[in-house]
Image 1 (cartoon, rainbow, N blue to C red):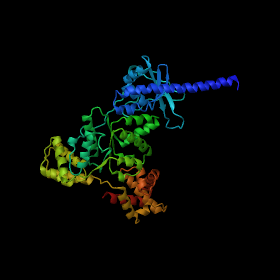
Image 2 (cartoon, helix red, strand yellow):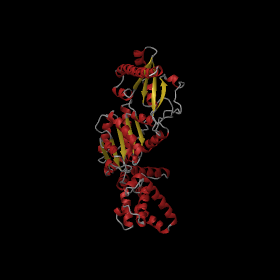
Image 3 (spheres, rainbow, N blue to C red):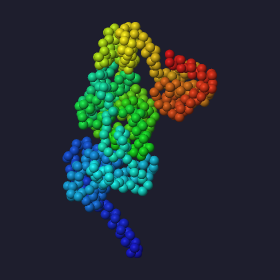
Image 4 (cartoon, helix red, strand yellow):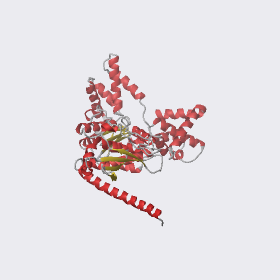
Length: 496
């Protein structure tokens, strides 16, 4: 081995061990810093924001640490910069500095994570600081779903409606369990066995109202807690945007810092595997860290279609509380409560007539009441039985009843003189294929189920098959008179 090779290997050897020594020193320094930090913040904050940090190296008075995302870095700089500075000065002297290495996961590539190095700074200097970005990597901004993107103070609005509170939520036999559980959660979020709390029931029974009421109550009692209400559709769209913008890690860390997460209409996650996967990890983090999760759905977990079993099992960890159709006494109370809040007086017999004839849900009850008040006010009429009968009759006649996919399959099968098993079968016989396509078409038109859910329930087809079926039915309805008759006949059978 010549002298050149010896020098080369000596350089490699020296560099390797120098790096190990720097890492060891960095670990020691950081452990001392953590010891000080842990004594000065709440255990939960320490676990969430400091345990994931990895020390990389110490060079002079500069400590380099690795954090999972720019959002993580932003949160540390916004909330813990003074504490970090004190801890570092204790270990490295008055000129101590901190540099973050941010791992940049590329959602579209299997390459190793890119690294962005960001020097720590105070907030006044942050706008003008330089960020070293590796060649070929675009500089990206923090994507906070609820504020204008950029490195700025993270302000999270709860998205809650203050008028949806417990005071305006009328209790009855149909909702007592759900309301009581909601009150328990509001009094001790994350500290009861009702985590998650899943509120389920039909349309217009008060699921959203109760979910908001819990959030509003928590905000009143625990001003320091971060509460967020969001629909599953908006959550899904934010996730899609984060993947497109390569900010998936920011999206996850944003939701992981929520204290009380309320997701409405969780059944709409059906068939959305990517969104289900990211929600699964967010849910686990929140649950393991004592945060509260509240969900609403139009059906119980056991009846949800195209939701991963591991996610369904999480839904069942806490309490699933059903909201049922209100009984007569509860409907009376709801109407009286609404009249009282609006400062309107109405004869008792009229209130009872509305309660006897509008039975399906709270939303329809209030809709009739609003129509009556409007009619009486605009036309300067008294509240009479004649007026209420006219409005109730029109309302009932115009209210479309929601049908299930099972019911649609039974009606279509009977119409074509076959059983449901045949309709769902794999056969390619033309009349059976058309019957199946019609069932998919009406399921899409008359239910709120996703294409994936419809396909799963009608012969275990995928969403593309359902989409093709709907287009085929539309085309044949315009070009084939006999097929149009099928559509018209089935429309009448399903709506009357």
